[in-house]
Structure formats: C-alpha cells, structure tokens
Image (tube, rainbow, N blue to C red; front, side):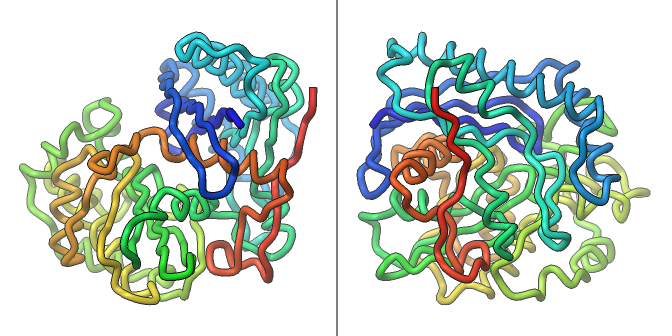
Length: 361
C-alpha cells in the first residue's frame, strides 16, 4: 500500500512528508520525500501556542490553539499536494495518510498528551483516508505515548546483525534498541538539538549551530555539565519520555556563546551515553537519524562518551531526514490492519496496543 507520513517536530523547523510503499510489517520501500520549512511567522505562532499550552493543566479549547491547529492542518494539506506532484502520484493511488500533528505539550505524568491538527479536515482536503492522534490511546492506557517509531525502526534494521540501536536526534532525543527476536526497548534520552537551538537562537538569531562549528570552537564547562546531569530523569528506568520544555538553557547562562554551545552539545552526548546503560545489551551499531546527524561535533562527542561510532543512517541508504515521517506512514497502515504500534518495552503500556484515530473519506 502507498502511504504518506507527515511529521512536524518540536524543533519547529518545518514539515517532513514521506511517501512509502509498505504492508505495515516487514516490507518497506521509500518512494519520495518532501521537506517544507515553516515561515518565521508560522514558527513564531506555533512557539507561542506551545508556550500557552504548557501553562494549562489539561488540553482545552482556546483561540491561540485553535488558530495554530488550523495552521498545522492547512500547511500539512499543502505539503501533501506538493509531495504528490513531486512523486507523480495521484491522491487516489494512496491508501492512507499518517498525520502526527504538532505536539504542543506532552504530559503523560498527568495522563495526557496534546497534538494539534484536525485529521478529519486533512482527510477531506487531500481526499485520502487519514490516521491521526497516534499517542492519546497509549497515554490513556498508562503508557508514555512516546516514542512510537521503534516498530518502524525494527522493520528498517531487519536484515542487520543484532543488537542494534537507532538514535533519533530531533528537538528531543530518543533511542530504539532492537535485539534478537525483535526485542524492543525505547525511550527518550534527553534534549538533543532543542537546547542547542535555543542557545544559538538567543545569541545569534540563527536556527541551529551549523556543522557544530560554534560548539567546536568552545570549551565544555564541566561544572555546568555536571549540574545539568544531576537530574532524576537520567536514573529513571525505561521506558520514559520527555517534553521539550523539561530542560532549559538556564544553567549555561553566563558562559560565552561558544562555551555554552560546547557545554550543551556535550550534555546531549552524555545523555546518550547514560541511555546506553538502560539498554538490555550493548548494541553492535549506533545508527543516527534526525537533524542532529548533520552536526559532526555532536556525533564526535557522542562517540567519545559512548565508545560507539555514531553512524548517520544515510550510509545504509536511509533518508535520515525522512525516517520519522516514514514511520507515521508505516504506523497508519498498521492502524488500518489493526496491528499494534506501541509496546511494553517502548512506551510502558501494559500490553501491545493499537493506536490512532481513522478519518475516512
């Protein structure tokens, strides 16, 4: 089945759209990819909606969130049409869209997670059956609602010698351990690019530390790094998940721009190293996807802290930018087939369970 996956991450850099051909099980073939950056105005609107959502004790209707949800739905519909034109594929040839939406707050400790975007409206705008709201059922059943990509990671690494780990470096980092007999363990490692992006934006207005150049020119402040690592999250057993706002750049204030970038990059690297201790076994390979794989300073620090080469997954022929979007396409097919998308070892839910809400045309 041809399926489209749509992903807009907490980094608010834009929308990733992927078209794959899959049975939702062992067969996966990438067909096309489209990346659409947000405008500065859209990014600011989504950041403000996120700030407001984090002040609420539970999701609720409010004008800024409604307007942001409309923005998400509208821009995602536009991107679907651009992807279809790029791929030379008609909408009627696509079986399903997997629509993640935009996470504005993730509070599994309070029993909820909040992704904005209207799945029914997207289905109507694209004339394609759409699966949305992938996380809520898992959280309602006592799971963390994240990460959800492990079952797709397992499909991608099916032919590789096990155990292997897939590290996603987005706004928040997460790792998937795939062992023999497709044993899955997964959890959020900590901030990945999120704090570094915030730091760079505050000092220069840029969106990220291009090639890790600023961090490479600085010195890690060990006292600040130690203080940041003194957080109960890192000792907590897996599975576990984070909201992007759970850590801030506040401890690094007072450092120079270069030293702050170096320290925050080292913090990400050390959180990945700490995560390795929560895996059932030491992986043979550490494959990296997401925007952080483009940061050679971060990859070097991860290798130094973990004692494992951090390999950009593109070396295996994957699209390291498109894996998350592809994963939601894959999970949408699984939802249509009533197959589970979350598991005890990945979200902490009691038993494997399905997820997602289907909006048919």
